[in-house]
Length: 134
Image: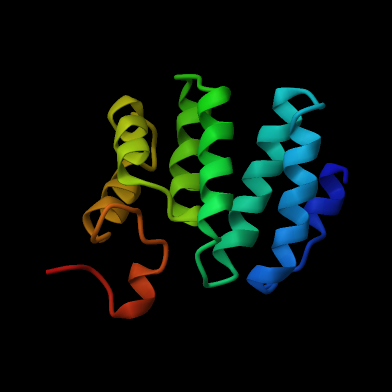
């Protein structure tokens, strides 16, 4: 799939509909330039969030591994990682590692996501359950 095809995926797809897309994405990621893979991941981030469900643990694991295999401490990469951690409900360890290195314009928003996520993973849907933690 090319980037336009990822962009054209409807928001609000069922979690199950994205499973096939992820299969294609990971297969393509092994063969394409890093910049293309990261752009597709950025698009999938938004699509995943709009499912209103966390992806399966295996998808989360593969996304985390992909991030780690492309690790970079540039502001743009860290911002992507923070967004991916949020939208895919990844572990707080990776989120905090990225947040500690990030000093971009959305830092306060990412800090809020962390503060409002209970447990070991970032909760992308905390605001849908009644807002900020007390």
